[in-house]
Image 1 (cartoon, rainbow, N blue to C red):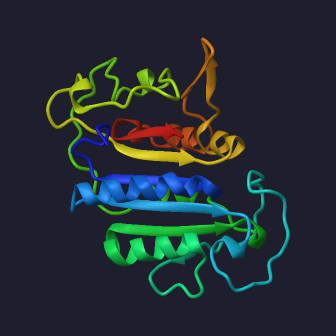
Image 2 (cartoon, helix red, strand yellow):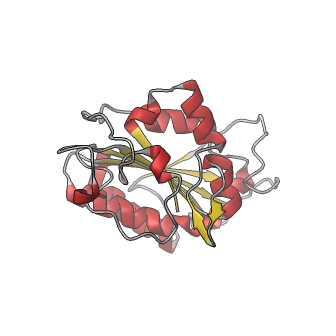
Amino acid sequence: MARLGNMKKVVFLAGGTGVAPAMQVAQAVLDQSPEAHVHLLWAIRKREELQRANTPARRRPSWWQFWSTESNQLVELDSQLQDPSPVARQLKAMKAAYGKRLHIQVAIDDEQTQFRESDLQKAISSGNHQGVSPIVTPGCRLHDSSALELAPEFETPAAADDCKCGAGAGKNLFVISGPDGFVAHYSGPKRWLGGQQIQGPVGGVAGQLQRKYPGLANEWLVLKL
């Protein structure tokens, strides 16, 4: 959470079981500040991962094949969700606890829905929670996106005093967690360097958004789990 600093927004895109760290991050961020907001986007294969009741679903290719032009009706998960699965029950309880500060949307592969570039752009731009982001000092371990590209997968957890940018520095966080293909599609693949996996440059859908809206890089860090 040291990377977030005084900023207030986290968008977490989770594929499948990647929702587990998403819930941990959401709880930590929302408990830390009453002004924080988290937008959780959960991509799953089947309706049964969300609800116990069986719902007829149309079959389609796996979730990393995103060229479909059909309608994209995402599920809004709130405290009124009926027959929740065990994971959805936890999410439902979190939504009830945090209210409007936690927004949860679900895309279901078997029902031909997925998170598109427009969905991510809306999640990032929704609300007015940007805060004031100081100028980032080159080489800052916490906030320089170029330095983050070389961060190893199992680096020592960052602390606030690792920041070189001065008091109050921070960036909003766009976090991606899930299968390798899922992470690569949305944020570019991780890379190998010196026998260990590193973050690598931002690519995929997140990279497209950065090219369309250059100002995003000033306010947001992309983290691959």
